[in-house]
Length: 258
Image 1 (cartoon, helix red, strand yellow):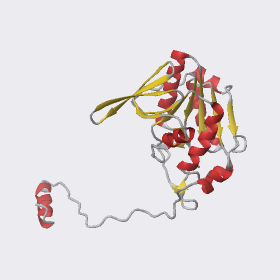
Image 2 (cartoon, one colour):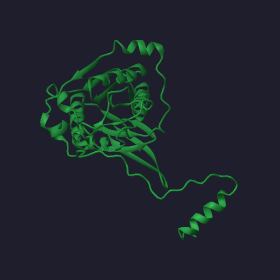
Image 3 (spheres, one colour):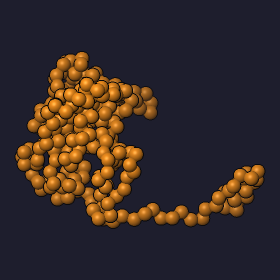
């Protein structure tokens, strides 16, 4: 079985995040890290491989420095990595990104494609659906328990009223939540071995992708302007000197909220 895991390099949570006022895009010049729920997806792929055999390939779309984050997946145990990177792809939104990823995944022909449920930068939680639509494959989302049996995959997900159990034939796309497993830590041997594992970078031309369908040209959304949130007015600060409750009641009465 070949399992492809789509992963993303996101700004490191400890480095802070900011928007570039020139491009109106997220500033990705700082330290990057592998998206958290994507790590859960990598772990689940490794467990399936350990149970059924096969190959795990991590696939990403982004700048060349994203390879640094892909090394973590290789250190965990993935067999190889493929990064789709091209200067013409800068500024790609969900639509354009799904196209580029789908072209890379078509090249791989994986039996199972795993995603993390959502990324910590854009927090969209829909990329997996867009890719599944382009590949015309069934999709299961928010999976907290995954089982592969023969030519089908079954996902269990929690809902407001209990659990959904959903099965789909392979090949399929599955988005996993962070409840599905506890990712392993890369061992020293794994970290050293990751340096020699195949990690290729492909351009849009390598994939036969139409450059008009990626980047700003292929995007269907754009940010027109940036502005700080408006200041909050009509606020009071109550210091608890023993009369805080009385002050609060008086303020609520003044606003006719009592």
